[in-house]
Length: 298
Image (tube, rainbow, N blue to C red; front, side, top):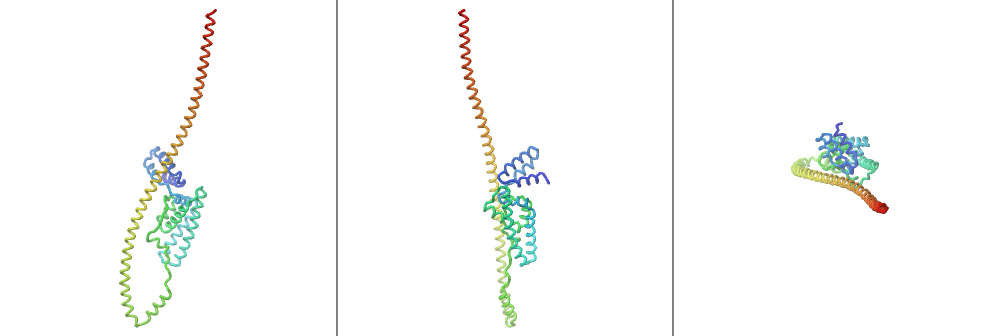
């Protein structure tokens, strides 16, 4: 494992409230060692959200539970490729059960580390687990235990694995067979089917066009969301850094005020000593003058 990986593992094992301070400390240490490029990379690491941090700790503490998420994602993907509706229905049920138990596990791990998850964080955990099952890239990030933010999947493609098709309507199927068996309806049916085929093609083209536009809008929205999330994370990190800096300055101010108080006490003691010395000097001078006068009278 590289030094960078070791540092990343250390940082993302910390609670979010101390992440920025420790990251900056390590960056300074690395820079002092002459590894400027590594220091820059470390400085760019973003503080994880509460939900992301909790998932990271759960993955580290419970690798077997994380493996269950990975296995279910693989099973769902395979069932989708086979168009196995019954299997997909059963796996979808298992998916919800696994997400529920995993959310409890994540919350329990966070609690054992002294952190209670907010309701919104719990929802983000569930959303992220659901997204990881649907998206291989998100799943990879989750398995590494280095999530920075929660994830949400709302795209086309793999998400379809969770859509279980309804079984065909038996009454319609029977009517269709009876209708096909009537020779008098053969020609009429052929014409109707041709018209239906043209209409279906037109509907399909319209739907495909709308899907293409929706996908473009989705990508644009995802980019905007990503940019906004990055801006929020950067601002949040800056706030954390300033809060840490303010805390350090307050600690320094407190130490300086203590030193000032002790210095004033020493000054007061010294001034008292000086006053006493002045009195003693005055008394000594008076005594010396008295003795000189007595000597002169002899």
